[in-house]
Amino acid sequence: MSGPTLTVATEAIRANARRLRGQQELIAVVKADGFGLGATTMAGAARSAGAALLGVATLSEAVELLATGAADARVPVLAWLTDPDELAAALPALVELALPSRAHLAALLSALRRAPGAGGVRRVHLFVDTGMSRDGCPPADWPALCAAARSAERAGLITVVGVMGHLGCADPGSVDHDLAKHRFAAAVARARRAGLRPRRCHLAATAACLDAPGTRHDAVRVGAGLAGIDPSGQERLTPVARLSAPVVQVRRALAGALVGYGTGTRLSAPTWLGLLPIGYADGLPRTASGRGEVVIAGRRRPLLGAISMDQVVVDLGGAPVPVGTEATVFGAPGAPTLRDWADWAGTIEHDVLTGIGRRVRRVAVDHLAGDSPLSQQEAA
Ligand SMILES: *Cc1c(COP(=O)(O)O)cnc(C)c1O
Image 1 (tube, helix red, strand yellow):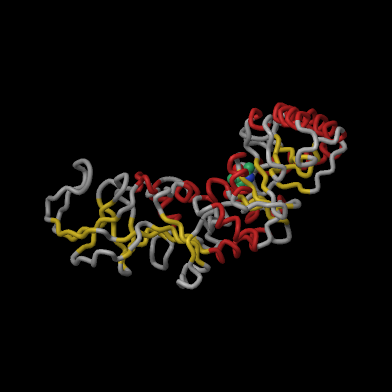
Image 2 (cartoon, rainbow, N blue to C red):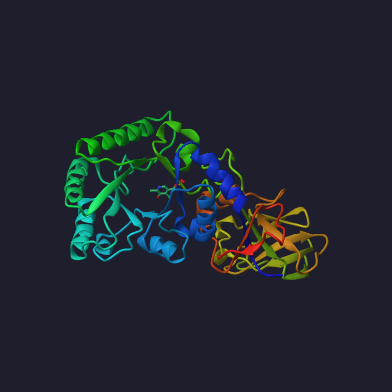
């Protein structure tokens, strides 16, 4: 018995990667510790499915991937959410940077001028906002960003290897989607008119890969889909993860007994209760209290009472199970799915998966069903 465990199937990640990339290059997004699955595990599987580049949000994520060897000269890493101050410091040459503003570019150039030749010419992507009003360069500032980048190219400091956008909506029927697509195409054309020659233009993430093939350009930048999440809920991808926890204590409780914190959950009949050592600090969403279920010994069992920080009580019904029996929270045949948990918690699968805490052991296997001890290895 070894506590709560997230079992991650690397062959499922590879299958999702192959399916999503199609004919395009794959930029495998492994931010937020690989959507909670373990960045090293996710990166390794994506690399063996042919990823050309890894993608993360922050610079510290990128630096860590290089430090662990998950990214290297063959498969470098792109970071797109930086603070100009961070760019003013010396950065590993294998980090490609997506720049959303002239302030970011200026900070980077000042660092490159201070350390000429360090790591060669810096590879950058220019990042345009196609309509989310979030990250990326507002379209009005785009021509100036392109011009400034082109003159830095001429000065031999950077080379613009990509243009990047991100879609807030991947529904090809919607006006917002069509407008974003158009804005991206216009931004790429504008970059070319400025003399830039980006060879990797990338817009589509998971949802667009599945539902808006017209957005694929040179490369797709996918994360959730590698983790098996189909944002549309159509479940077209292979599930990647199983969350489980052992029953650590079993008791008989009488009618009228309260369960857990507060006075909201009182037993109306006697029952057997099991205790699972997993709570909201481990990513079991507290907002799923009163709705969540697990599978124990092949049967669905409701959770009872509020989900606590470290633990939760499960209703075993008329008969106890041996201490040590495994409960599946999600990801096995007959068990709830990650999507069920997202629905119970009133959120999306991404939120549940990335919320799985550090106390939960990660174990990488080839296949979830196979799980053979031979192929089993402790995830890094
Ligand atoms: C998270 C993220 C992605 C990956 O999106 P998925 O829907 O998880 O595939 C791609 N690009 C940007 C800018 C992101 O923030």
